[in-house]
Length: 632
Image (cartoon, rainbow, N blue to C red; front, side, top):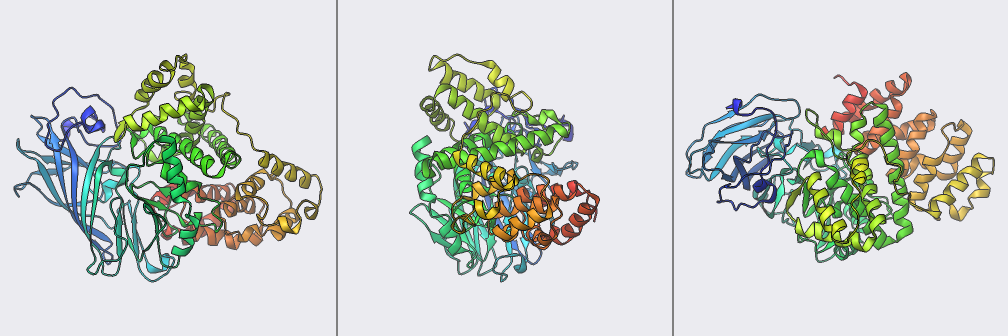
């Protein structure tokens, strides 16, 4: 059967992309071919349309035993269906009549796992796969009680993006394939289970929970978490989950969620997922947030106590339109998810907190973008600075850089500035509405924006816009430049201090510790400091502002770069504490990278990493292992 797989590629049919078929329909029209290098599936022959998942979560063995029943759609002559797996133990496969179906597990490929090839009969309508996850399933992180905030109960969470869903569910793991799902999940009594679906708000008596996601989603949006979790409602359709000791702080931090949802709806149409809840996970979660439908996963590093880091919530909320509603067809088109989301995030933040606030965020993102471009070019991979990528033969995580996020944002912002906000907003609202629950390629996006924005409004089409921004390397010279008087004031203060003005003259007591500046201004302050600070200057900064002990993770991480760079030993212990107890890759990467620049620093990095690595998720471990050339 493996001879039928000429290469690890997916010819995604139009049926798969737009879910034109109902679960019982056959694919009977010529498909539109889209290559996905990161799946074994061949949905132009047979594809999944609905999942019924029955599972038992076992914390003792750190495994999930489950039965995944898929409703399928296939061509008349389809002989097999191919799913993606990684480390799963497949016990057997049956059809809807209970008959055994022959299956074969193909050769394993790095990061892709193995194809599960199932023979089909002419009348096969469903396939039921009995299986068990491996103890090292990449998507699953099993935490001991000591690794949680309350240190009372174990905890489990999943991270399926980009192609890790296949390590806990045998599935067609491509962003271009959507399906609905129901789930029946059993967990230890006293624990709460949640999924990217309709969710309970209270612990069940028997540890059994039922879930329903009636809107088609791709596999990377499958999510599960289990733990000692409580809930607090914020509005009729928003709420927050967290461990009991965290719930009060989380509810305070995210009090503006309903206001954000309303602002988003005014911009680009109704929120189509029912409720918008958020869960604060333990600190090992490797991302800032994950946009699982109906249940955003969030890092506790955004709990600053002053609502200063809630732009992350705006970002994950925006994904409810860009990404969850209109999804990149392949990971080569990842910028279509993230560039649109950063643009939408900025618009939400502007609507809720004002233009001067959102412009500070935009300037910080431009700083990150310039740094990312320089790093990629220095690494001699200039093609990775293009928006449209070619990740064939590579892990799709390689494309999850500031290019997709921030270059994508500035490309869309440039279009807005050229055509005017009213016209661009009208286009985007139609884009999200007319393509809802569909997948999108870069080429199709270009076709639609040409037709529905430029031609519709009688505006000239500038092909160089796409050549420079989507298919071109680096950061084009016509990149928009945000303006912020507040950041200009920060730069003046830094300049005056560097030129000898005493700190006490620049900061009166009432100004100290963010009483005057926002966290974004403090972050810009730290980023604007010179690279050759003396020990005395480091000591003075820390004495006045207590950066080493900041509760704001963004400020702390930025300060710790200086701690490493300037060998500021008073900060070393808290640097270690931060790295051991924080699993967010955004913070880990620059800190370990800075340490790795010197032999002494690399030694310190490996000593810290030895203690921290057991607390990290696979996503973070895979990055840090490579960076530190780690060998156990």
